[in-house]
Length: 275
Image (cartoon, rainbow, N blue to C red; front, side, top):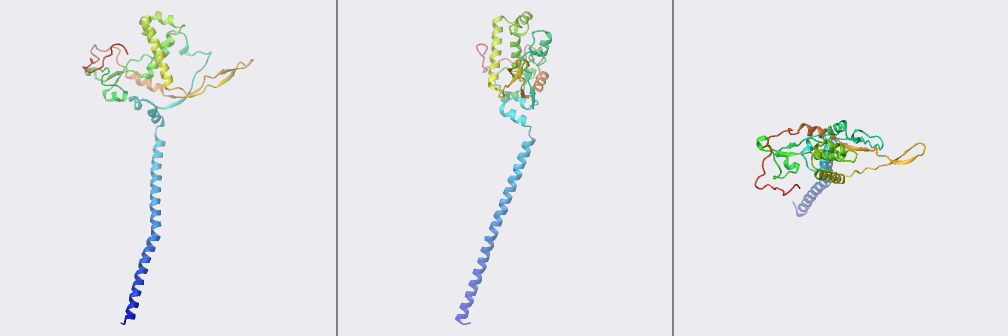
């Protein structure tokens, strides 16, 4: 083979190699967008599936319970009672008195008692104390009687306070003072402090969770129409009956042994007077 033929053969080999390299590069160039498309598709589908799972779980969630847990202080009751809400129209009548507004007498007292205004304490187990907000130096039940912490449901205490304000109204005071039961067993100074305590507890509670609704007005008196506030408004209400039943079923006995409470321990805080 002469030099010219050899040179031609080398050029052909080089061209063949370059052609193969170009083809490989072309295949990579063509296949790369396809690979990116596939990856993009897989990622999109994955996010869609994950989003669908979360959306499905959200739709299956008891949103009342989730929202209540978000806006309430921590409490063991969050997973022990029905936390559902229902729309209820308030009885806001101005002239027509329901049983809760009427003057003191036995059937009126029975109606208030049925709300749980005087339920006894319940027991919060030690493993729920932190969730209930109790410190180590708060009053405990003697371990020989089961241990735990004596406690009262705040919502029921608010109604207890409202009931005391009702009893202390000018048109009820003499009736309940003469009966001498409950708060009226105490002397008038302690009774006054009890009433003012309840008044301010309710003030703080109402300011803590103020109602965001509005009171419209209606026309009254067909002969001479005049505007009057419509207090018969709709509200989204928590299931009070579930709370009441929970507290009723867990009341401590009416009579407990003298050693029912565990004496304060060495490091427990003891206030100089009633806080």
